[in-house]
Image (tube, rainbow, N blue to C red; front, top):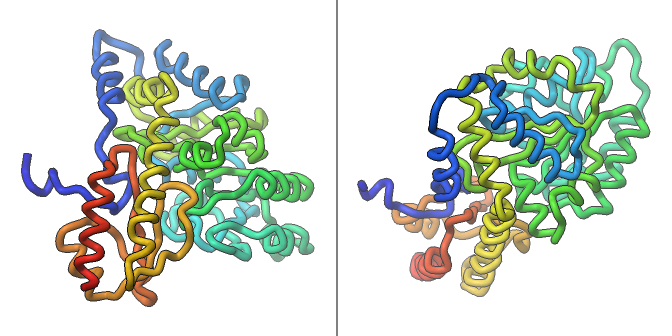
Length: 347
């Protein structure tokens, strides 16, 4: 294995490898022939299993290839052409989908007042309660990211208030759950409990950031949205021909609550990293880690020295804020050696 592949860092939970049990599940699925495009009995059984684990046995589950596709597919399913999605200023839909909601879904995004990555109740209220005539776009969906792009969490009470406000004003609720497992682990909730609190009509349930090779799931809880989803998934270029290999990964994630084991470990490593760097002179941690991300500010020269040895992203070039993301395979040794390197870089 080359040195480049052996390199470890804190760039993203996407940078981590695939969990061995997930690889085993893929290999176990690689026997014989099966109908393609998700029409095999195994994929359909895993769809039902995931819906059950989410406490929504009547929900419709649609496996897709990536998170951007899951989010765009959700918008296309929920919104009419004259409707918009309300998002936070830090939402992945707004900042990291290269305009896919607008270009692919034809959806306008309305940015609500945001605090630490979370939309505020008052900010959403200002958008959804204003009068709408034929000259203005009509808010049709509230999208909440859990956990957020800034590593923060919506508490259960916040989720319930936001969902109530949205539903009272005729909006559907979408949860971008690329790190939904990390949020559930951090809050001490089951997947079903967190989903119920979210009041979601659609959930983009993440797998790639939690030990999968690839794959996410769009979970449709509002039965009115399910018809046509098979066609929309295909049209949104998210239909895998050999779908059973995507399904097998989710099967592994649910076995023995591997989703929880992976997410809880990543969160614990973020707390360890926070504790290790928080007392280093010259490092200012932006906020305590709620899930598996640590944000900090450090001098540019120290950051550049660190990046020669470790992978991580500069989050804000103007302030010097960086993001250190922990993963299912981050080790205590990874954290401790990185903390020593931070200290050395600041000397």
